Image (cartoon, rainbow, N blue to C red; front, side, top):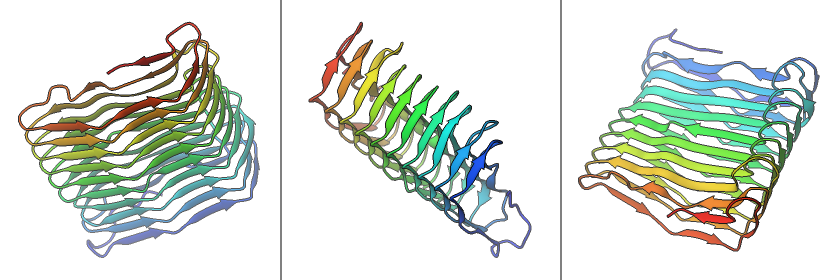
Length: 360
């Protein structure tokens, strides 16, 4: 659905309740597909709400499209009012061999002035999925940008846990970019923890890929962005490419005036990985270009990084980690604070490249 301006200002209230899709058997075709859940160009002061989306206990064989496709959750071009999106829960689905991507989710909010936004948790747990061509889980989640006035955006975070994945492509592929990009006045973004835990992943490409970039980027005035902790823990991965790729890139970039950004701890811990193909390092985990081009009294801080207790086997290299270009090109009274960095208790059997490389 795409609601837009149709009623008197300030009295507009649009609500979509919960959507529950449970215990269905879907064979052939496009599986379960949601083309759009969008709000745009609402009259000033409108309040809109979407309940929880729960997809659980289904058996899906899709031979002509994605098994579960949520093409666009979005709200844009609004002045005043509020937007609420509930949780997205994808739980305990059985998805036997299919040709394309299994789960594809995309969403965003942008061009908002004085709007209060609340976004529920993304939950993908206890699913069993196989692809014959394509990625198992592909998420381009919550672009949040072009925020003005006193706009507030609160995101509950995400849990991707206890899934069993066999992918002829990438296993879990996450792009999280433009989260707090182009922020002005007293706008703020607050994001909870992101957890990827206890998954069993087999993939011909990347095992787990998480690229967190262009975030807390191009901030002005008194804008603020706050992020929780990141966990990639207790996963069992066999992959052709990098088993775990985790990157912060261009985070806290071009901050001006009295802006503020903080990020929590990062835990890449207790994973068992085996890179069998042409990747460089089995585990790559690092921040790069963090806290660059900062001016005025802008401030960026991030928590400890832990790359601990991983069991790594690789035909290439073992682990690459360490901060690159942190606090680069910082001017006036701007500050960058980063905490401790731990690389401990890993067991690494490397092939034709470095066992452990730390860039500091």
